[in-house]
Length: 267
Length: 369
Image 1 (cartoon, rainbow over the protein chains, first blue to last red):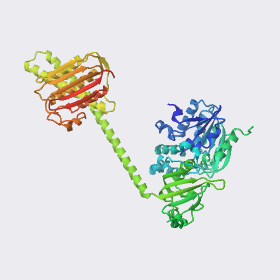
Image 2 (cartoon, one colour; image 1 turned 90 degrees about the vertical axis):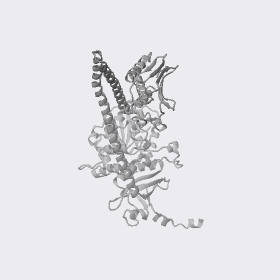
Image 3 (spheres, chains in turn blue, purple; image 1 turned 180 degrees about the horizontal axis):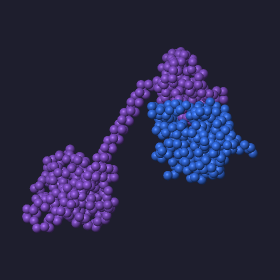
Image 4 (cartoon, rainbow over the protein chains, first blue to last red; image 1 turned 135 degrees about the vertical axis):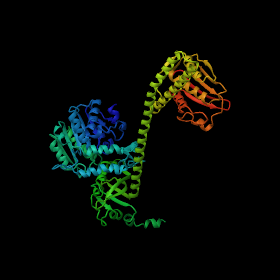
């Protein structure tokens, strides 16, 4: 089956270099709607949904394959092969930052640049390492899927009728965003929050930009510092934005930081 | 009325509303929370103001908020019917339903999020019970399906194993028939051969039933038969031999070649004829008509006798239907079901009409699939 179909690939923009946007746990490609369009004038912009999220092909979901982030990373590599991406830019939010790290290690020629928004190589504290969550926090999270599956079901993202304040959303208003199947969300949460990719960071050869928010409880500043210290030659930009989703809450700041990193000396 | 509306005490309405109100600034801190939610969570009045919103969420709630609800608020400005747990000051979880809207800021003011909470303990309990009931039902269904599959496999294996000894008996009766035996012995051998034939038909039906039920449907081995008449007539002869006292009248007008599985068509004819011979009035002949038209093969088998009651007619092609008349002492009640399945597998139909004059089964199929 085509990875382009499976991952609900949307291609816009024009340019010789490819910029692939990948969303994190809990949402879908709508996550990038205020950022991606700004790069359409100079890049071939590719947006995707991980299998289980958004408009992906749910029948392609395989609990074994997606039990770890490697399954998601192999999808990125497949997409890159199908679209013949070389020397591309991978932009990954949240867990997709580590998925991109794994994909870039597996296929170093595919992405020579990584932009990691709110990355965390390990969410659970371990000895001196601070991930921000205790093992019991994550147990509580995983138990909540069984205890209160409605919280994670699609019914909480009802289609809304109209939103005069946000005309840019256009006709897409009628669909639900960030749809997830509760069972798949549960397994994605397990893959995400129990992953440990600290040892992979040193193997990254791509130029890497880390975008770090303030007051992000999912990936705290100390975690961003850890990633910067362990990916060789990486750059960290601390944004003024707070929370975990600057791509939605402060798209301008994200876009500016990305542009600056990609072409620091504009003509 | 208008005067009354203007006189509403909004502060009182906010604090003493029968639900929780929280207004959150863009730094994630509570700007103001009403008395209802403050006391529900075990805080003193005003004590929640200035706290981070995350402090009243359980860990699962925090992650849900940060990874899903906050993005949704940014994308569509509103979320509703969110079921989550809040955390009381003493750490206990309080199930609630939440709705929120984001009020976009301006150059002067930052975004704020307005949140409403309604208690949902009973409802959560009910949901949990529904969930448990569904799990139990699913488990029961899975077990029943496994049992059913096992039974059907058992039938398939049993049918297969019965064939070999039956083939030996059949060969033995043929050998015996060639020996010099008394007239009485010849008669007994004839009866034995009739029984072998009937039993082998039953085994075929049982195995086809198991196969049809095991999901594969009846498998066909399709060939193009230039003339079906000898095949059909052989079946007729065999049944005539086993019921020498009953008359079977045949009319053949097969002028075209037919794409079919000949052994299955033979089985269908055998099942329909066997049914007519068993249930029809023995004084009247059973009539078989086999003919082709431009596009169809049509086979009909009719018999006289009491009509089939309407109630039985509706379920006639279901498996194991029997006992609606005095007959059906022999056979498993599978014959008509299998005939119907064979018709279906050939993209054809098997229909029945029953009047005091005659009961007639008609099989029709297209000449080519």
